[in-house]
Amino acid sequence: MTMRQGVLCTGLARTVADVLRSASFETGLSLADAALRRAAWSWNGYDVEAAESLRRQVAQRLPSGGRGVRAAPRMLELADGRAASPGESVSRLYIGDLGFATPRLQVPVAGPGSRLFHVDFALDDVGVWGEYDGEGKYLDPAMRGEGVGVERVVMEEKQREDWIRGTTGRRLVRWGTADIATAAHLGARLRAFGIHPQR
Picture 1 (cartoon, rainbow, N blue to C red):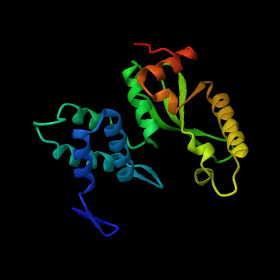
Picture 2: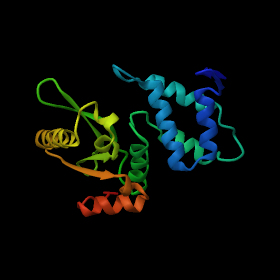
Picture 3: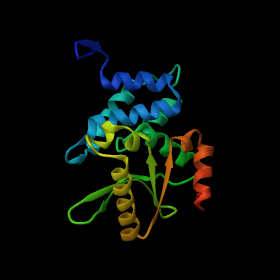
């Protein structure tokens, strides 16, 4: 048990293990991704060893029998703290369900000057970049930043995308929340751009 803001709670590993046994695959994977991100992401990058340590702690708390024992280990195996949002977690799950190879996440691309851009997904088996766009980064003033208008966010995102496509020679495909309602929805979005799994 641990104390959080004056409330006694189960620890992170125990909480993740409990949720994985009872949640849908989409919810469980999103939670596991978020837990690994909390444990492993810092100012100097993603600490793979810290992520694996938490993964082992969660695995030790998964019972060998009972409810959810089949799905929970697979959720834990697929979990990756480099996913920055539940939308990215669900996207990654469906990308795999559609038959694409496991994508690399938050791939750095050198930008102009000393800038560094990160792309949500590298679908290396089909040679494209993928980006999940939640509506919040455009519509939520708190996410845009104080005094930053939608027009500026859209323009900066366009300039970023142009740079990434121009310097890497890869197409960049975007999808949003409506496109991950199901794996079939995401598949339809990708097919509309001529993107099909190779296996």
